[in-house]
Image 1 (cartoon, rainbow, N blue to C red):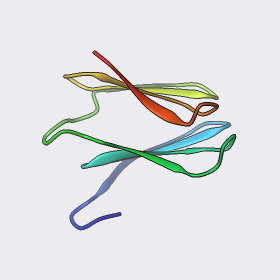
Image 2: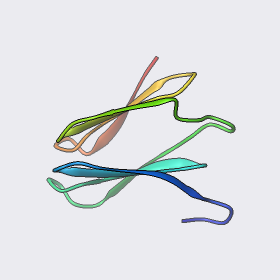
Image 3: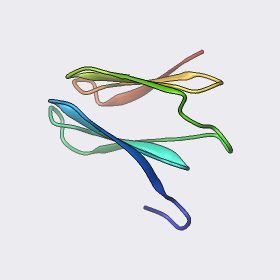
Length: 78
C-alpha cells in the first residue's frame, strides 16, 4: 500500500478477495491470479457491498464498481 493509504474493509469469498482502502480497491482472483486495482475518486466512500463466490459489487454515491473473478477486471456502472 502507498503512503497515507489505510485499509478499511476486507471482503473474502471462495474465488476472490477485495481490500478496500481510502484510495483504491484492490482485488485478487483465484482463477487468474494476480492483483487488480481500481482507484477511488477523492473523497469517494463505499456505501454498500454485495458479494458472492465470484463477483463483488461496491456501491458508492457516484457509481458501482463490479469485479468478476473469472474475468479479473473492474467494470464501472453508473
